Image 1 (spheres, rainbow, N blue to C red):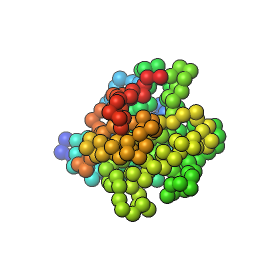
Image 2: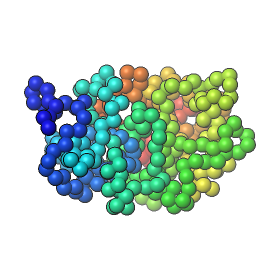
Image 3: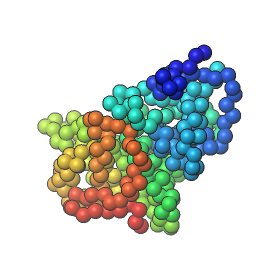
Image 4: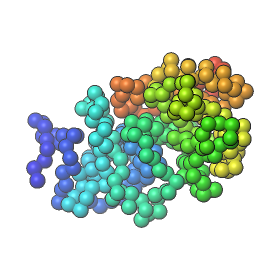
Length: 305
């Protein structure tokens, strides 16, 4: 089958998979990349390269392309088509996700966790994946150990869902992610909320899905220490990542109004890259471990024990 190429004979990134006849021998490195995508969600090529610990990016890109194109027996990765809706699609790193074939391989090697399920829209998943992967990648050079969500939930065989008391308008709370950091014998755990600035802070109807309502639910879980009963973790802070600094300040002000005594457990950061004219981040967020903003105006570094 003829390849889809441009005038410089380069394969076109928007083209569907173009299988080759040569067999693909999978390696432990390939499985490690599949596992990274499984942990976090769809990831750009340069994020996946950071997980390899290798030096040759061109070789890495070639390998991803091979896994995407596959053979007559199928491919191992997909390029989610939603990424090509970005204005920057032609010039930014390509994003890869798992397909059923790569998921099956993870099952066969005991690396597919039933505690990891993500059904959110693509942009929400991509933003969450870039945040989570950046945090994991930031822990290693600092001598910290990243604890992924499935390791937390597996200990108590619990779902992501936290039940809430009768004093809040919804029955349960499901964060976008949960992880922990081992600082060398001391531990801190975090729930993650990804906000692409598509919701208002407050609305007149309490049953509408607003971020103000979500903050009230987190405060309920904090007061009743539900995270300890359900997930077996001794503490929890909430990381909120949004796309606009002004929106972030409004969030913090509203939280301070709701409960100034617990507001220190909530940390905020703005990542404009995922705003309305979004693009794939040019680099891994190497500074994402700190500092984070608090509602009282102070800052907190999550890489400090």
